[in-house]
Image (tube, rainbow, N blue to C red; front, side, top):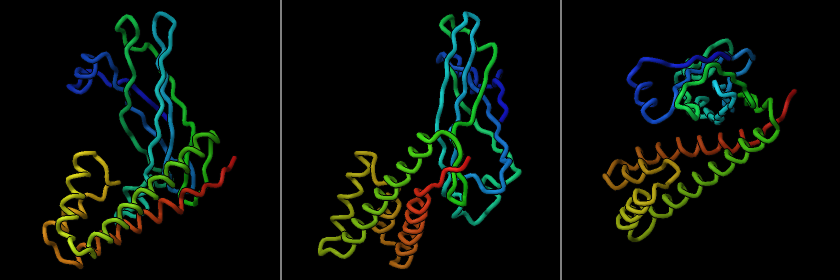
Length: 208
């Protein structure tokens, strides 16, 4: 894992105006498995002796469904992403930074690292899977109902207004648009496959 401060770009200048510093993090997969999720932390050290840190989790389980396997975090490959740290209390960027990987999950349903982070990932996957299943079941019920068109429109309005739907809004829009039943069935099947994969990979075996 390597990291560096981003400097001079419009993105960096925009962040600095908001009291933040962009950090570029590069990870390398040294395992023999595809990495499906990870949690990292970045800490900045400032001139006045203080430190500020940030941590986050990325779940890329959907990579296992992709037609292009090169997009997955394959063994031996690297992945680069941006992170953000706050400026110090005097508005100064960190003079040094450190980073750590707190948890990694793999395609064989094993995980390594902080037990709490592993448990948190498993819980998140279970809840996401349940939310998707609930949405798909509701869509299937609405399609078969006597007033399906009105019900679908109401579901779209509700999900748009409340920013919910577990990512299934495109299915509702497709139905409302009058797309073929086969096309809609294919979309639902794809979401079911993702939902089942999420649930399957909510069972993680901790390795050391």
